Image (cartoon, rainbow, N blue to C red; front, side, top):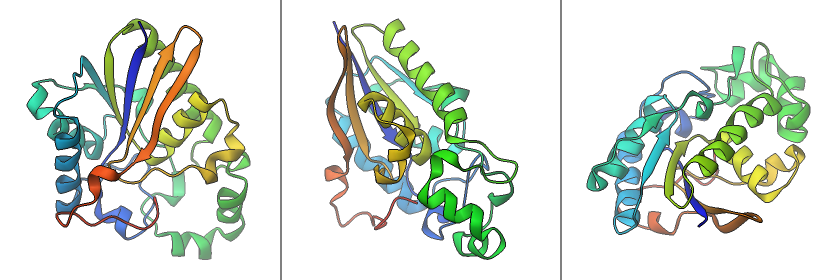
Length: 213
């Protein structure tokens, strides 16, 4: 029996909307983000979910709590799914980073697989810890449906791993707030059901950002 992975990005925060680099800083959901998480809960209400794991950061754990409330299931905090560390960029708006670290930001935007914010992670570092953990969960939860709640960068890297693509494709992967991705781990490899599904977010109850920052 294959293992089904429901990979979900957390809801919106004020720093998403202001295009401020978050990384491992614990920025909470805003009211719009909580409403977005409520729509994820509605979309998954009739799905059977056997286990759940979340980044330890509150924007992910609260998204998980809201989503899983009707399932009476509590997500287990998994450090491997915590966000990319932006180092000295953390807490700075993208426009400020463009002024203070223009060359480093250009590299992050064009060849992120070669980039490293001052004092921060590399994509390879985060890919290694996150994808190895996902593969382990898929093996240990054989035949189950597992929800994983994480972040923009982490989700993009996990999707690239599932698709068998290199990290140079990172800029071409979208992950909107509270999007749902669905994968199956079969004996023959990964089967992709959907990527960056935000159909459940088409509601006048929430606002969606035009880009995945």
